[in-house]
Image 1 (spheres, rainbow, N blue to C red):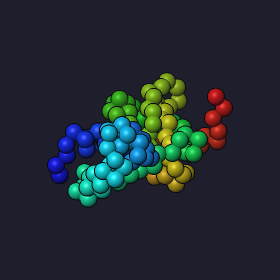
Image 2: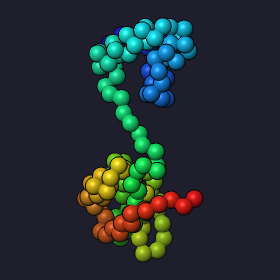
Image 3: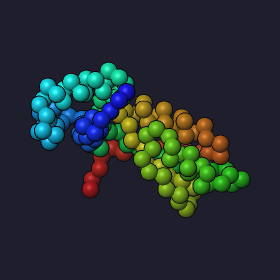
Length: 139
């Protein structure tokens, strides 16, 4: 799993934009396209790069606002920290009013958001939730 400085730079470029062409990376590093391709193949082969992923823009995601009530005997900030670690949770706010916490969730589908909500409801201290699916962003 030996990586040199050039491999580190290639990894950096791919982290920033995994779609960047090997030709463009090669130009930046003064390497041929085939040299970059070979290095990436080796990085994949030795397990340094596990996979290339896709991150959808907000306009392609399903989002929801989840209002959360916390048991009065439970420290709200501890629940907030646990919520922040859940998959799909983008933002956590502690609020006043009928609910104690609100979260903004995002996922590729309503089913994915539902899985996150199921995990949220299992957090000790969560006593009630109210979920609102966001239909569209206006501004």
